[in-house]
Image 1 (spheres, helix red, strand yellow):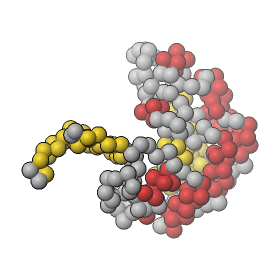
Image 2 (image 1 turned 90 degrees about the vertical axis):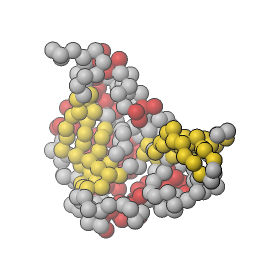
Image 3 (image 1 turned 60 degrees about the vertical axis):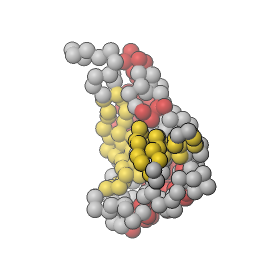
Image 4 (image 1 turned 45 degrees about the vertical axis):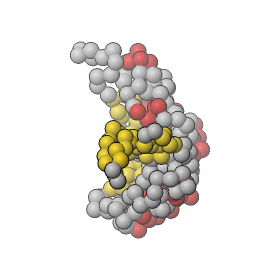
Length: 239
């Protein structure tokens, strides 16, 4: 997302009061019109314009000329890793995370994800950091994504963020069959205090999260680390 707020500028003798809210990938190479670019809201007094919100991420990429960010000439390939976003928003309502306010969760198609991964692989990138806020919020999609990742075993490694309280039996079975070294899982515990979690509005019980984490740590084919956040509401220095 990109926001440009409270800008005043002179153009052809007129002063415009502009507020622009834009959701897009890549450079601004198209005009800000409903026919060419979705998810745009702006104000040029006295008019307020909005083209709404795009729920289909594939269409969002299509409208801005490039099918995916990695095909942009501005994309930088000089880092040893690539960040891959296949969903936006989050099912959860954690008060400490801005993604919790963005609903529904929007998905990029598996076909488009596969195309992007192949492009990334062809550039010699071996480390993929998946930005999806809760990778396992949808078990069926998560398992299909893991099948896709498995096709790059020994060639690429994937870093994922998951909610350990939401480990279904189907996902557990899938995880334990994956090639060793394919995944680095970041398990969101966030706090070991039940009241702290409740005050933040986080879904998923602490007990279930710890049980899920214990299961993940029992797998010798996956690297796991747990997230804890200091300074959440109700925390004190002794905690």
